Image (cartoon, rainbow, N blue to C red):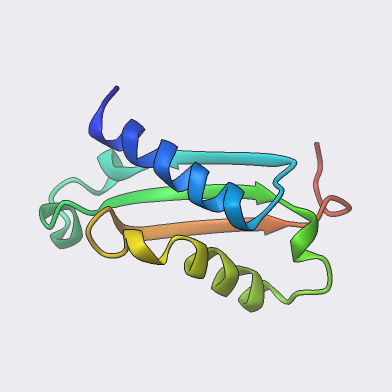
Length: 94
């Protein structure tokens, strides 16, 4: 496993302690940001897609805050930037 694959496994484990995701996918997009100042610090760029019933009734901002709280120990050392797509089961297209 690569360093970022190990990181992703840790992120997934932390998210699963807070949410009961029906879908969870984390993509390492660090290669798209090579040379970026954040990339030099060791923190990666990731894209998270999560479908969880816990998002029901929450605004987009509240969903993002909940995800950031679940992953807070990973900022800024492991995560420099995070794109979040957070949906309820009824919003999911899958």
